[in-house]
Length: 406
View 1 (cartoon, rainbow, N blue to C red):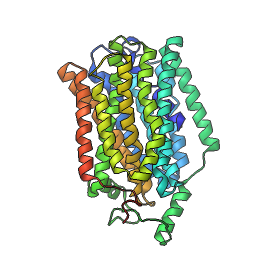
View 2 (view 1 turned 120 degrees about the horizontal axis):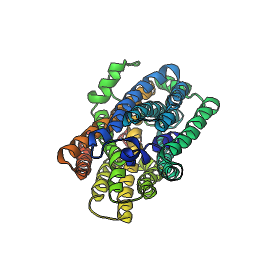
View 3 (view 1 turned 135 degrees about the horizontal axis):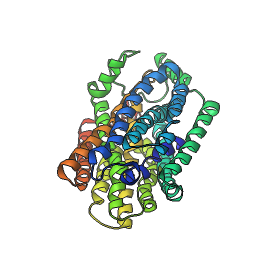
View 4 (view 1 turned 135 degrees about the vertical axis):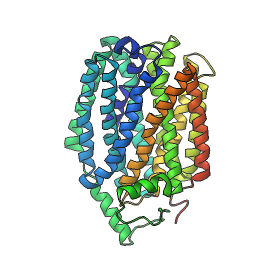
């Protein structure tokens, strides 16, 4: 999982900060700047959906391997990119990689996890991923300073992606049989422990349309979780694209930008070691709602002060909010998803969640373009997080089977 995060992180500091100087993007072109994150969001969201269904047919390991193969061209496309369009195309492949690989690391771990430990399991998974994102942002900033943006990203990317391919091929174990065995125990009435509040009237083998409708509107709880997942990605789109540009315009050096954004990733990643376990004790619902509101407050704080220390504090607050909501939204979905269709449920939740990069990115670009001010995009995201958290509070419920059993 660390390598999945490192692959994503290599595109998050150097590329947006040097979009004009290195990759030929016209200054002030907010919509063009946001284009690569919009492309990433739509592709990754769609591939999450595909990965979930595909993994129930061909297995988790094969989908993971396909994800790493799709990443191989990315470092070369960045190295030889003659225009910003090549960066957008490379980000499309990054979306394929992340959609397949991140989904499978999470689904595979849930296959072999007890129901009362899903929070800590997803917390550990996301900890590794987002610490990887933070490390890559910092390391690539220094490598770009030492070797140049293109060559630094080429070296870093190839080491990470080739290492991941080798590890996946020779050391990863297929976990689909565990999920099938769990489903068989439920069917035979042999499952132990509290019974979750599974959605009613779902076929034993639901179709793709059955699952999409269930997750999107038929089950109020799943719909509330999906909308929260979608909106929280507005924050990450903002951090990915506008944080580096905003800080660069304030005269902050590339390594310092890497550290400020790295604080967001480190707090997000590190805190999930505790917030996932916390939700196994007190439930998912309250941490999810609190996380939405705290994260939105951190975004607003970026504009309310000045200086590296203040911006680090703001990034840390957003990271803490993310740590509260991120593993626990996924854990809530897993709580009430039957083993027979858990992979599909997680894939569709992740489809809506990562579509937030695309929808949020478009919103950021439109708001910044129409106002002529990047700062307006920060307020757009903060207000969206507060509203979405309120909707989750009203429509959602506690999903932990011990705290709210069937």
